[in-house]
Length: 223
Image 1 (cartoon, rainbow, N blue to C red):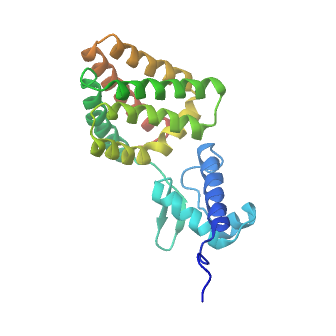
Image 2: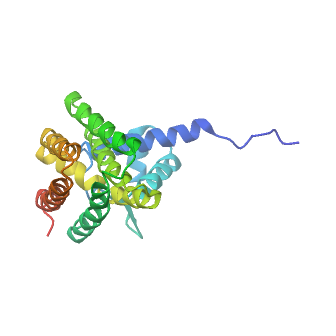
Image 3: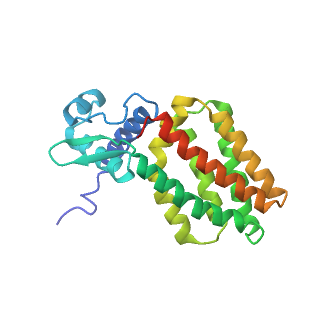
């Protein structure tokens, strides 16, 4: 009789996760730029793991939108496209703007979440956290604005948009090194909300997202 749970492989799964984490770090820190071909053999040798482990790690990155798999060309670091950036920023305005306009109707817990994510982002900036961590904290804040709507579906949609924008924002933050400015801008938005200036906060967010669209396209040289 087969031993119970004989097919479980925690150690292997952990190795795949560690390989994916290291590749993410290298991508967000700029060691692997957009368009870089992620060759299994070279990565396996560099990471000291098997090719199947690298293949699974790459599958995770492709699912997250950080890497792209093309027939006969393999996997490469994703390259943002200008039209995609514009489309995602337009969709973010619809979702995040809806959240900001519901500030008064939101629950104490939802408003507290906005403050918590802002504090976490500011703390990461002050600690000089990695670009990957700054990126995560930055986008957590924006998703928390959508959370003000009280709609799980809208939050899920925002999470999906974050995946598409994650790499582009990280590259811009690295190029411009303006995390402190971004943190100050987010704090100013929350102050408007705390002051019950919903119209002012809404307009501030609209300009912020429009500026982000331009900054991404210009910094990455997208046509």
